[in-house]
Image 1 (cartoon, rainbow, N blue to C red):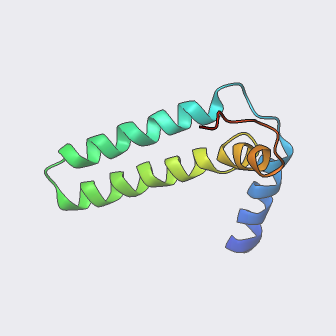
Image 2 (tube, rainbow, N blue to C red):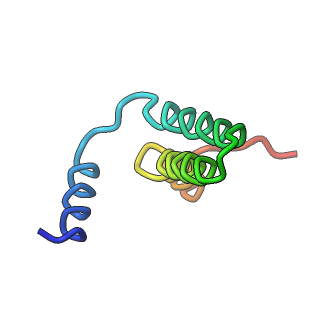
Image 3 (tube, helix red, strand yellow):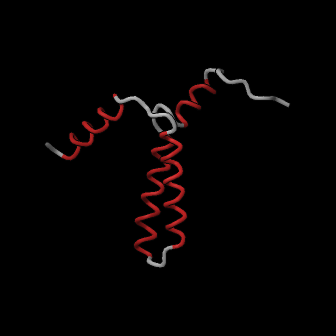
Length: 85
């Protein structure tokens, strides 16, 4: 197997599974904590690595069927009415 086919298999498995309640909030929290830890690190390489991991987790929380994509889909279809002034 090539690296690309392995990644595609992981994506298929992830897309097929059900979302757990609060999964995206937990991933978002972990990403924020990693970004805070990156800011406190003294090592430049640790800041880069931990910051990249935190950013990836925040991106993961924003994507997917239960994250911001669901919110954007509901807003585009007019599913949620926001108070207007």
